[in-house]
Length: 323
Image 1 (cartoon, rainbow, N blue to C red):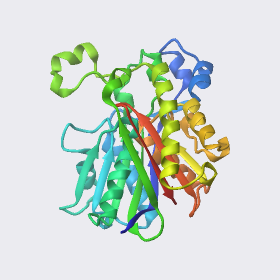
Image 2: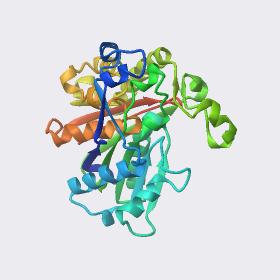
Image 3: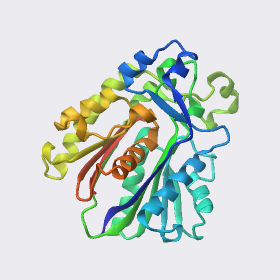
């Protein structure tokens, strides 16, 4: 059976940078408060005319170039997003058109909030392992600023926009060793956007389709859940904590990230952290962090990577990868 190996990575961040100082003028907060509780100093915000597919397009082209491939070599596209261009068609289908991919390709979106990229990676890996695809483009892309209440300091200080992508291809070398996905819908009220199309447009005026989160409660569940996920992933592969070279976590909050690193016994220097510069970019955060660490030479071929995420749903998941 084939394994799926990472052939290339790419990322894109919108040009506009919003600092904590700008947020001080919008809500009752401060740069010090945001840094201490989240580790975030700035985030990127998409221009009014930029869509999710715009960001995904830019990240995808960079990933393809990094892999030395053109778009015609891809036979599967999976986009993880909570902020798609349209209800339908999928952002993945929009991306197929934009990249000039051939007719007949497999393309679809995955919705699992901040865990979306791990879910999408798992799906693409299964296609490759079973022979359903030979090369896959997997993207996490978000314009999360569009669903933020800029008067809610508990959420608007956290999120940013961006896109990250990886190219997976079939190979015999160790690549994606295992993936582990989970969900629990019983705690939906803790983190959600409380409006959807099927509920009727009359509700939009009241609820505005914005993110609602009980931050302290989400934090507690995330730390506990991710700790158990680390153990599950290592045990499934017969590995010890010290075998992991790099932790590439979802960039939600520096305190959650550090708690997971401590669980692994990894020093902060072995955890890829972009949360200070990017904020929480939801499904885009892991591929963006991975691309940065590959690009600057920290992550090298042969390194063992643990990717993990926790998001609304609740959803959570991990991927263990020999890069």
